[in-house]
Length: 413
Image (cartoon, rainbow, N blue to C red; front, side, top):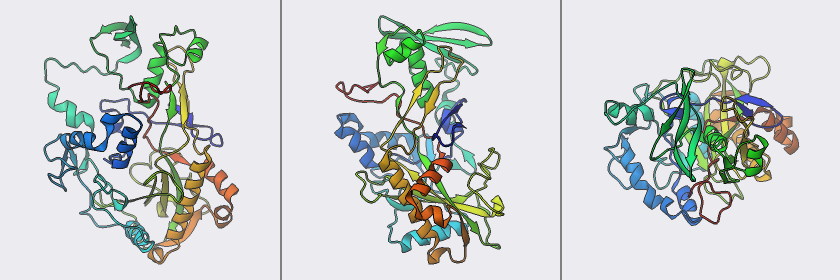
């Protein structure tokens, strides 16, 4: 699937989990929850069932935490195993990042999924002994033999069937044959790009937009396809000194620093992480080896500090490109168009540069590759460089926004 990150980059490839288990079968295997403040902020908007106090029992029910047992935040009997990888040797770049953050005055946390997740800590994972435990493996496999469950792969849903303003089934095709399936309840769970596309193809969405494609309007819902969000990631890269190993044991700890940007109205809205530029997860992806590098530095000798904007002010959109379900929708993340978003990322990269220049990196980092000093020192040049090089996570959300009845952009209650 193709979409737009920033206007400077044009169209980019976006991976989608078109497989049993969806995104949990292709993504990075981090089991990082939303923070307590995130849920409580939703409750404050009027979604009172989404407070952390009311949500945490479901987290406990879902997980089997192998490190933290039987407390308020964690469960021990759920289907999804959670652990914090830390028994392998600690890579040199992780040691340097950890020490640099502590020396800069940041605190630590032993539980990124607990009540106080801010600061420096190990990202929880659902990778057990090198095996990704997807939602398909944890939830679906144990019940695949149930007689009241049918799972069919290779089926393409074209639209939702609606009668008297009620969803009664779906129209689908498989093996070149179109057919209809009727149901008492239809659960639409096709991700933040395909879900709004299916709603709009079915006549639910912004009325003017649907009429452009000759789609009869069943319900005018302007919020369908709006409010698109996805975590962006800006990368500072550096040359690792010769002789410093960049090999990573699969059970080695990877640290994340959640912090609050100066002047932010959010809590823990920013994340810094460190990793190699080339690893087993990205070396097969076209362009990833060279995107952040210049000069004669071999990609295999480079590492990075990534700056992620966790809670953006700006949002993007998903729109139909055709009334044909087989034509992919158009979407634009509209990254960094809000002044508070570009400001926080700019300051985050400068903080990453200060960490890199600290004593903690003396025996690890040879020099910074990008951005160079001239770009880093100039707001306008740095903003342009960020927009030209920014990457994206597969954390797409927001396009079927929940909200109260008086929210005109809400799609679900």
